[in-house]
Length: 282
Image (tube, rainbow, N blue to C red; front, side):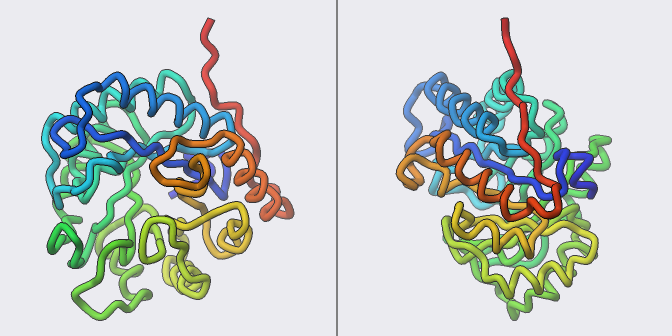
């Protein structure tokens, strides 16, 4: 996976747009316009702050179905991603929670998004949704059937979950890449907002070889320098929210602060640059 070709930088910062509850979710509020307005605001704040890509995910749909989401969720996310693409020129990805990689791939292929995130691509994880089994074969076959070149970023020993087998990180990374054919791997802490251990990041990077490794949770302006020394990119959300609270919208000042800290940490390599990624409308 060529990070520079996709994100125009070798150390991408990917901001997450957490969608408000969607149709059929327990907390659905009845107005798709409200969901779209919030998503557009967050995407604009992230883009203007200098991130290199976006992931759109149905974060507030909890409690999640473990595999296939309702068609209404797929329809709503398709509309929302298209609206975001009308506002920004950044690469856009999808994460359909908890583990509906097939729906994410279908949306991405239809709207020409560039990548998806899959929480469990290989192995079996015990989660609050029950046992989730990786479906790498089905997902990779489906991508081939669609004639799609959407990239698959896969979590390894994903947060809010525990592996049924022995949690050997090196083996898990290698299996995800060599047997699951992931284009990139993601390493998180134990939960949303919790960073991965630096030693684990280094182990994952060594096991991944030429495949990029992303930090999947817990990055903030204070620790991003250390994290980016071991990883190839970072996916960030919680620390960019107003007052650092996950339920709040994205704060443009926090985005700029985070991006500047990441720039400083990689300035010697000169491989993170600021973006002008907002589309201009007359």
